[in-house]
Image (cartoon, rainbow over all chains, first blue to last red; front, side, top):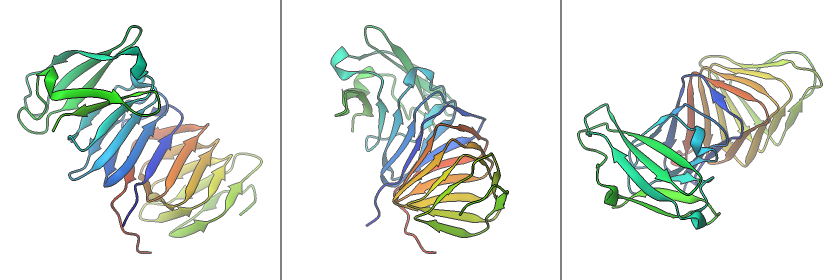
Length: 141
Length: 103
């Protein structure tokens, strides 16, 4: 039974490369700024952890309700909320979801690989405690 | 492994090893080659990966490294931490929890 691989990058990543998360219980962690676009592979049940979510500008593709984006710098006790969901859901476009608390705001760019992959209804998404003071962003099943 | 000269590793596994140098040297993984890491640390040098750098088990660290990735850096079954250095990635970064290791 394979266990998840964890790739933890503490420093800023530059360049126009890509990132992929595969399998079960895998974690890709960006500890600082990154513009790397990240793809969750089909069948993944994994986590993209953003320690500096405010400075993550890459798109996120393939996210399903089995996956999570951990906004580690957003304390869940600060009551973050989803304040905006924008995008027409066209193939190749992003659905842009803004999460805010009293002092921070981040917009996640979810890449639609098929029509309306990511809903424009905020009720399609949820925020929860990551168990380490941060906030998990997830799609509802 | 010790020393200050540049190292080129092709299809090599590093297990339970700390590889460090006092002055920056070079570690190169060529295109088409794979460097497997298992419970290992590489520190204090430059790394150019044009092939695959694959952490397959245990805790692995690239520490204080100036890393350029043109190929694939992958953690599959282990943990790979790239700490206190720089990473320029024009290739692929992969966290993979679903792979069976055959090597």
